[in-house]
Image (cartoon, rainbow, N blue to C red; front, top):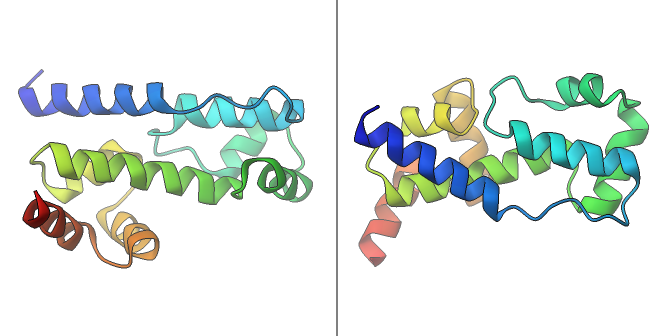
Length: 135
Protein backbone atom coordinates (compact mmCIF):
# COMPACT_ATOMS: atom_id res chain seq x y z
CA UNK A 1 0.00 0.00 0.00
CA UNK A 2 1.44 3.39 -0.95
CA UNK A 3 1.45 6.51 1.19
CA UNK A 4 -1.57 8.07 -0.56
CA UNK A 5 -3.65 4.94 -0.07
CA UNK A 6 -2.64 4.78 3.59
CA UNK A 7 -3.60 8.44 3.98
CA UNK A 8 -7.01 7.88 2.43
CA UNK A 9 -7.62 4.83 4.58
CA UNK A 10 -6.66 6.75 7.73
CA UNK A 11 -8.92 9.70 6.86
CA UNK A 12 -11.83 7.41 6.06
CA UNK A 13 -11.45 5.53 9.34
CA UNK A 14 -11.10 8.76 11.28
CA UNK A 15 -14.17 10.23 9.63
CA UNK A 16 -16.25 7.15 10.41
CA UNK A 17 -15.03 7.19 14.02
CA UNK A 18 -16.10 10.83 14.35
CA UNK A 19 -19.69 10.13 13.32
CA UNK A 20 -22.22 10.21 16.12
CA UNK A 21 -24.12 6.96 16.56
CA UNK A 22 -27.86 6.85 16.01
CA UNK A 23 -29.86 8.21 18.92
CA UNK A 24 -31.31 5.38 20.98
CA UNK A 25 -34.59 7.34 21.27
CA UNK A 26 -35.16 7.21 17.50
CA UNK A 27 -37.42 4.52 15.99
CA UNK A 28 -35.60 1.24 15.49
CA UNK A 29 -35.72 1.36 11.69
CA UNK A 30 -34.11 4.83 11.71
CA UNK A 31 -31.38 3.61 14.09
CA UNK A 32 -30.72 0.60 11.86
CA UNK A 33 -30.58 2.76 8.74
CA UNK A 34 -28.17 5.28 10.28
CA UNK A 35 -25.89 2.48 11.47
CA UNK A 36 -26.05 0.86 8.04
CA UNK A 37 -25.21 4.16 6.33
CA UNK A 38 -22.24 4.69 8.64
CA UNK A 39 -20.90 1.19 7.97
CA UNK A 40 -21.27 1.55 4.19
CA UNK A 41 -20.86 5.29 3.68
CA UNK A 42 -17.96 5.06 1.23
CA UNK A 43 -19.35 2.11 -0.72
CA UNK A 44 -20.44 3.40 -4.15
CA UNK A 45 -23.41 1.00 -4.17
CA UNK A 46 -24.95 2.70 -1.11
CA UNK A 47 -28.06 4.59 -2.14
CA UNK A 48 -31.60 4.87 -0.81
CA UNK A 49 -32.87 1.84 -2.75
CA UNK A 50 -30.02 -0.30 -1.44
CA UNK A 51 -30.68 0.97 2.08
CA UNK A 52 -34.41 0.27 1.78
CA UNK A 53 -33.73 -3.29 0.63
CA UNK A 54 -31.00 -3.90 3.20
CA UNK A 55 -33.13 -2.62 6.08
CA UNK A 56 -36.46 -3.97 4.73
CA UNK A 57 -38.14 -0.56 4.92
CA UNK A 58 -41.11 1.04 3.12
CA UNK A 59 -39.35 3.76 1.13
CA UNK A 60 -41.95 6.56 1.12
CA UNK A 61 -42.84 6.36 4.78
CA UNK A 62 -39.26 5.73 5.82
CA UNK A 63 -37.69 8.77 4.14
CA UNK A 64 -40.04 11.18 5.89
CA UNK A 65 -39.53 9.46 9.24
CA UNK A 66 -35.75 9.46 8.77
CA UNK A 67 -35.80 13.19 8.01
CA UNK A 68 -38.01 13.87 11.02
CA UNK A 69 -35.42 12.39 13.39
CA UNK A 70 -32.10 12.89 11.62
CA UNK A 71 -32.76 16.27 10.02
CA UNK A 72 -31.91 15.08 6.49
CA UNK A 73 -33.60 12.76 4.04
CA UNK A 74 -31.51 9.59 3.60
CA UNK A 75 -30.04 10.65 0.25
CA UNK A 76 -29.14 14.07 1.65
CA UNK A 77 -27.57 12.48 4.72
CA UNK A 78 -25.38 10.20 2.61
CA UNK A 79 -24.31 13.04 0.31
CA UNK A 80 -23.69 15.41 3.20
CA UNK A 81 -21.30 13.02 4.92
CA UNK A 82 -19.55 12.02 1.70
CA UNK A 83 -18.93 15.70 0.92
CA UNK A 84 -17.65 16.36 4.46
CA UNK A 85 -15.26 13.42 4.14
CA UNK A 86 -14.18 14.64 0.71
CA UNK A 87 -13.45 18.10 2.10
CA UNK A 88 -11.18 16.59 4.76
CA UNK A 89 -9.41 14.52 2.15
CA UNK A 90 -9.02 17.42 -0.30
CA UNK A 91 -7.63 19.56 2.51
CA UNK A 92 -5.26 17.00 4.03
CA UNK A 93 -3.97 14.88 1.14
CA UNK A 94 -2.71 16.00 -2.25
CA UNK A 95 -4.74 13.61 -4.39
CA UNK A 96 -6.42 14.15 -7.74
CA UNK A 97 -10.06 15.12 -7.31
CA UNK A 98 -11.13 11.97 -9.16
CA UNK A 99 -9.36 9.77 -6.60
CA UNK A 100 -11.05 11.65 -3.77
CA UNK A 101 -14.46 11.27 -5.44
CA UNK A 102 -14.06 7.51 -5.77
CA UNK A 103 -12.63 7.15 -2.26
CA UNK A 104 -15.68 8.73 -0.63
CA UNK A 105 -18.21 6.67 -2.57
CA UNK A 106 -19.08 8.53 -5.76
CA UNK A 107 -19.35 6.55 -8.98
CA UNK A 108 -17.96 9.33 -11.16
CA UNK A 109 -16.13 12.63 -11.07
CA UNK A 110 -19.11 14.43 -12.63
CA UNK A 111 -21.53 13.18 -9.95
CA UNK A 112 -19.06 14.22 -7.25
CA UNK A 113 -18.49 17.68 -8.71
CA UNK A 114 -22.22 18.27 -9.09
CA UNK A 115 -22.96 17.21 -5.49
CA UNK A 116 -19.98 19.16 -4.14
CA UNK A 117 -21.01 22.32 -5.96
CA UNK A 118 -24.60 21.98 -4.76
CA UNK A 119 -23.40 21.69 -1.14
CA UNK A 120 -20.51 24.19 -1.21
CA UNK A 121 -21.47 26.63 -4.01
CA UNK A 122 -18.14 25.90 -5.73
CA UNK A 123 -16.38 22.96 -7.29
CA UNK A 124 -13.93 20.78 -5.36
CA UNK A 125 -10.81 22.15 -7.10
CA UNK A 126 -11.85 25.74 -6.41
CA UNK A 127 -12.66 24.84 -2.80
CA UNK A 128 -9.24 23.20 -2.36
CA UNK A 129 -7.49 26.27 -3.78
CA UNK A 130 -9.45 28.55 -1.46
CA UNK A 131 -8.56 26.44 1.59
CA UNK A 132 -4.88 26.36 0.59
CA UNK A 133 -4.83 30.16 0.22
CA UNK A 134 -6.19 30.59 3.75
CA UNK A 135 -3.67 28.17 5.28
